[in-house]
Image 1 (cartoon, rainbow, N blue to C red):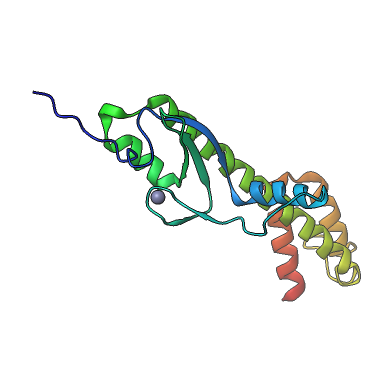
Image 2 (cartoon, protein in one colour):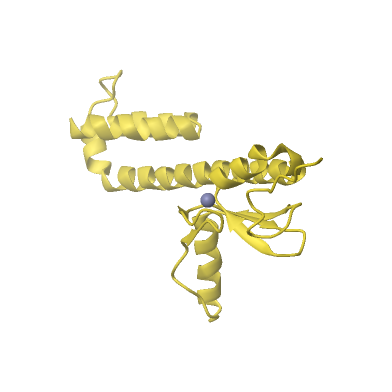
Length: 173
Ligand SMILES: [Zn+2]
């Protein structure tokens, strides 16, 4: 006697499932802005809910069921959905979704860093006088502005963000 285990996603369409694509809210915002600029129909709403559990989700993972039905779920549900029922797990779909998840996380980190870098540059530009008036942490003949310019050129992204925080704190102290 065999017992057929039903996949948690079977209410969305029959197994096996294929991974289609993933999108984060920034992706959807960018796509929408493009449509807006081209004068096409667009919606301001970039949020959505998981087709499996109904929860509001930020990152969409699209899958296609064996009958062609496309559905989207959140990361918690795709992980649970594919891991909980070993029998029907589509390892490839799971692996592809996980890769997409990692890529989105990297992209989000990079865009956050880029925003911080431009915030720092704006701050330095807006506070030139204060930076010129403040003392260099090591040399009495130099200013905090000299220090900042020198360090900015030496540092990588993480260092620049740290420098911005340090300089901002020094000015506000
Ligand atoms: Zn869900």
